[in-house]
Length: 332
Image 1 (tube, helix red, strand yellow):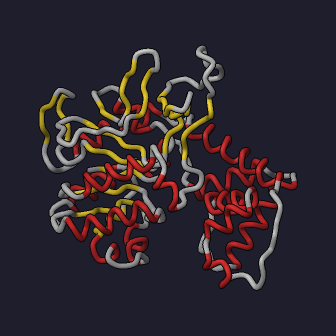
Image 2 (tube, rainbow, N blue to C red):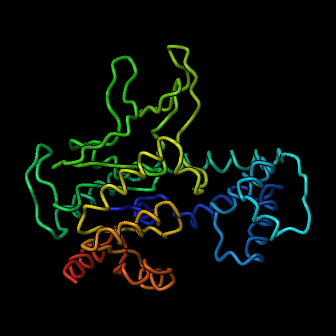
Image 3 (cartoon, one colour):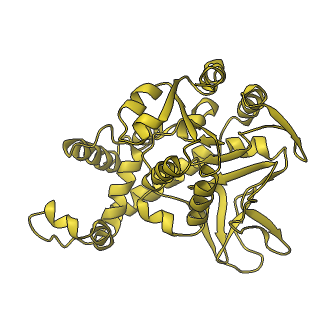
């Protein structure tokens, strides 16, 4: 099983959240927006948040857009961090800034270098350990054909569209590709699950639809609500469709897999982390490898049981070192 985090798309032109933070602050240069974002970063650091990024800024902006909802999302614990109740009104500037950030992220995620990503994934899947097997999709790597990602971009999608891949969507006459949340329990082919949504997922007429073009007008006069993407990734997203179905499938696969190679994921998403924690307890055969340039440092900073269960591989995805690193670590 392969799990791709933000660092897995960096070699193909998509920034990590840290990279997005720098780019977006530069985009806001010269306006009041940059001062607001910079002030949020400073306050986050003052409150002890280490290396806050654009996702943390978006979390704060979301709270400013709807303070009442944010307060009740925190729950009764809020009284331990505030001397008195503060009634704030909705911040329209925060709303404008948040929409600008979302548009910037979505635009960048649609501009990956697919020629480079396709070539690297082809090399990666041809050389990873674990053996190969023949299927209706051709020859595929055993143990790597089930792919999960938190990324919005289409790097892995571009590679898999050249093969037969099941991704939780199905064709419906008159409606196109619609999300069903169904993946095969036993499959010898490729599967893909995008845990945080995707730049090609849109809500059209109340359905989650996968499109290869950006829609503007529905010929059936249906409402086009916009892209289906988690902004930012709070715990409660896991209770809503289509993300709930994706997380259920992740848990299902982790409980039966023997190896999971995690690439460029920072382990900051609580529902996903909980899936790994529970699966490591229920599936003692599961080995989890973490590939990133700072994997050993990242794993050392984790809490148990992840800290002692994950095997770090210091390597950069997109380079030869990642392939060699997983080959060397596979039989540990």
